[in-house]
Length: 237
Image (cartoon, rainbow, N blue to C red):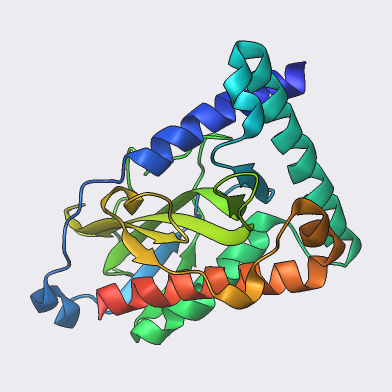
């Protein structure tokens, strides 16, 4: 029960993240010439991949049904993570950062990994930024509440899904230069985010098919994570 309770708290935080995109602030092209060296702050990313169903059949049965639905998704998430780990894939946080930065490298900026401490399990932008020492021009603050596979309902396919929240802060005075959210395979209107359509080659018609092909499923997630980084690079050009 403790595990389900903790997961429900995480799910509530995720729902807030998914529905309320950070306030959009476009990147001023005039800043492009002044900002060349980006410190990529340690992102706030989930450790494990999530398997979700937006409208789960169990939720129609009231509170008990909702608990059963959340428990079912928790078990599916655990089984999926076990399957990908058995194939030698690393955890979500490491993989996402690797593929995100590979996509972001197309921006033409010099990227500098910058280690910062974030409260465990907290999803959001940093409250305070490092004091600028002149070695970098801006801080790139990233967090994600969802990396994994999502189905709209019981009769729809699972597709790779990524939500990435982005803020670019000038190092000298902590002015926010750019802020937005990028959503790969969003549901609804994407909450005002920059939206990316999932590639159809990575659809799975049921959870059994998804967990039976962890190599292909991870390939789909890698495509999604890299595409998210490339979309961010496009915004910063």
